[in-house]
Length: 557
Image (spheres, helix red, strand yellow):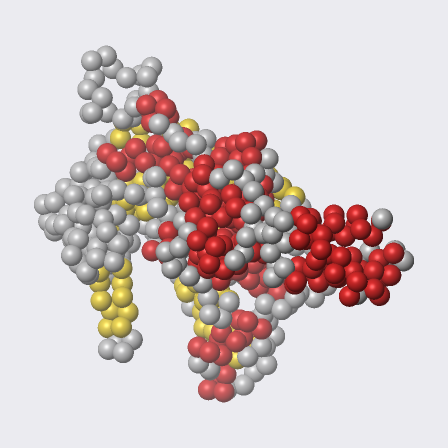
């Protein structure tokens, strides 16, 4: 029987008492005292955990971290994995529940073809071997939101195995260097999701919503090939982009369509791997990185201070920025896996193994799904670099925001401006405004057509770059005006009268003889002052480059 554990929290300290040989043994050499003085509330526990995340003391040995991930992606399907119930986010509680979802006696599962095709397509995109025969199993555990008392999954023989996921990390001072890494994929399996338990602390009760029960999931198991939060977060983001490109999952973490469990351990290089902890249900890429990095540091601190790592499940408190114990795994739960008696083996075919005369609607052909694979994010980035000559980090930025690549490509189609200038405006100006106001691409008041027209005005030197930013600001106010109308109303069009500009430059030089003397003495910045004076005289309607050319010509004569 597993030894019962008792933890007391106090800021900056932690005690653990274990039942050993009929009595309690105190660990870590903690000071003794009455239990009543040591017991504190949850806030004290949180503070104590935060205190443990300080930088470790310099020791004789270095530490290496090992991170593996289990990722659950909700399949994009109109109905659930084994029932005809509709799948819809934020529907009224228990409004999308069939008899099978509620586990009423006599109901039987019917496998959803769309979910199987999504699993095969995802496996192919992740370089997996697709098993032509896979099996379903029952995994028994008892939660209030799991009516059957078991989950139908694929433990013994999953649908896809032995794949790989390649991702790139931006490094360097300007994030301009790319390091490409690969993480192995152990398996991809089909399984049911559970329902939701909604805890009402005010009434001290828990409510059950079974709308999510039975929704199809893809569980993607990544081997422990990562070593920090940044690597794990980048790998998950790449997988998210792949799933969205395939259409097999919307992978919206805010809606629970992509959830991550992280297994983390630390050890000295060259020594056996350490005891791992599991941080459950991480639903944000940002929090995933923070949780992993915190847990790595916590384990190092614990070991360097003479403690030990417990094989336990932890959760991440995003407000406190730390992981918290949920339950220990010392006494490993027996899920009592058994073959699912109501589902036969899942058989898939390719062109070589497809029996003659078989109705294509009755079987799933792996080769046909392979032919339908769309362009994957990695290929898209390479195409952007070759087609538009953009930097690799710009390709990553365009794909990292939902809808941004499509917006960029629509602008490119409608403007004469160079791709480099379009890239700069989309990533710096347009995206900056969106983030400042926390808007999605689809909510932008500036359309691709409007930005393309503005860039054409700038490219034809009808307006200056500063005037273009002023026009964009007016466009963002969404008053229904075109860039040309704004330029006309605000009188932002550049002066094209060369003779008038020469007269203004001459006047500026006569009024500021000291600045002229500074230029002639070789002060390089002095000419910029003259340019600024002339621009002010033209109400910023003159091209600085043209002004500089006129001034240099006059100064040299």
